[in-house]
Length: 214
Image (cartoon, rainbow, N blue to C red; front, side, top):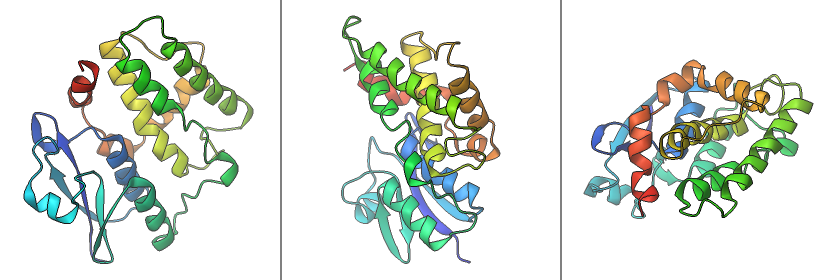
């Protein structure tokens, strides 16, 4: 099988090192968990090279070469990979597909908020509490039960960004009381696939800097 080709973000300030895009990492996690060989291209997204714009005029990452065509959007890419390489299956049962889906938006709102009284911290806490309740009632360790599925691979990089960026910029961390969320995140972060595809903490922090200091 020929290696699949994927283009992801190079790190801010170090474009030849794997960068901090959670959507790129989601696709890399999928490739790793499915044990698919792939070739990685790093794009400097703050100074987009011509070859990158040629394959993807919108200039967004990740983009992946599938059946000779470059395809953008992590949702689309992950869907195609599941279809083409169904084993091992990472399909999320439909009733679990939207678990935790609002966490990332709430995290970004809180991270970039300049107003401590706007309730954005509470909104994020509500989303994390709802994930906590789900994990409490559904025998884990993952969202859909014992088996890791696509929803976990989408959440893992987002929870990692949340931990790194909020820890750095807001001195905020997931409350100790959310024991299930914390052990869920640890279970994801300790996987070999995650270790292999994560951006270093300093690149996650650097990646959010321009949004935080807007």
